[in-house]
Image 1: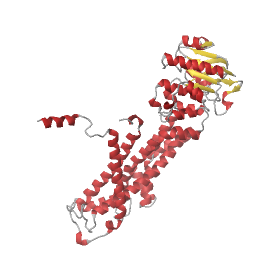
Image 2: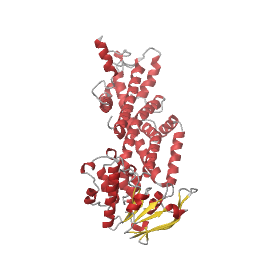
Image 3: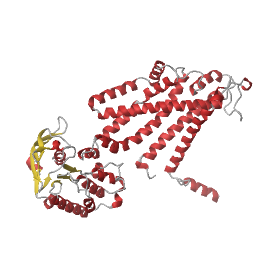
Image 4: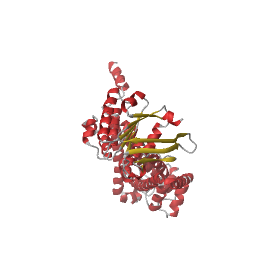
Length: 289
Length: 204
């Protein structure tokens, strides 16, 4: 009875472990980064294993030797999933990076180069946002030729809009701050003001925006590959794995879709966790929690 | 040096109320001119115009007969803002705030009562009064010829107020720096200034 009461009491206190909120955030951040790195590095080594077919071991349900089972050609699904995810992550990173750079340049141009430039860029943002994402993505992909380049360009060209808007707003707001006007009257150059006053405000926003672009990029990449407009069939991309698995689902081979799907969700969640935790960590208002 | 506002008119936006109408003012380096008026009579607006933050719709601001904007990138007329917490970048240490001024004399910093260990702190980690001292020091760089003080002591306790005003009077006298002081308090203006202008009377 006494032990039970004691247990309840500790359950009620907010800090169960000795860690504060900041340390917990950091822990999850590092865990997510490690998971993604493991997937990436694993994918590099499993390239061969993902492609080898072996008819002596086809359609095996998940077991110890093949944790994710094997498919109708006897390919190791675990190797295929990891390899597919690592391709997705690489695509996600490059697409998000291109997209973020584009967003940064257009956002800054829009906010600093006068009214005409601003109208142009905002109009362009509205234009891209107005077209359904998937449609534009398919168009760009097909126009650039399918495959890795098309997918990366397609995702990059459709995802910069929201970040560009954010940066434009931030720069516009900063320009009106008293300390920036003051710096101008103290004879500081535009470059000095941009580096010393604006960069410390823009950088965290930019990095978090960049990281939160990854999951979108990955999901769209697998979506477009699933629909058949993305990567070619030989590559074990997650979208390909899922669309092939569709055909075998009705014959009871549930593991072909379940595990790759789960891993995709896990990867996306990891990226979100990194972005969100990083946002909380760099926010000075929560510095002492 | 003489700071002169010549027939200045100003309104915010296109259809705003005309806040300043044909306003003229002449101040000498040896003077400390007080500006008094109730809220909404354009005291802060006048300060912004005199220090080049806003352009008047009509009229000119001259320093020794030369338009203010011709003085190069460093403006010799410096404004100390009413709210120090808005006038410093929350992401820069106080050290960098001081460095932004024009070769601010270390002796001046010391006389303002700025302590060494404040320099490494961020603006959120010091009080408003301490921050205002930094803002004053920053505005009193080498090339500053005129100082505009827009309600700079309203948020300070009486002892700090008196310290800061004593310092400013002494320093501006020593460096032959003109000063224009804005305040709601007629007693304060009377005590500090050599001459007080009532905007309410000249404007209506």
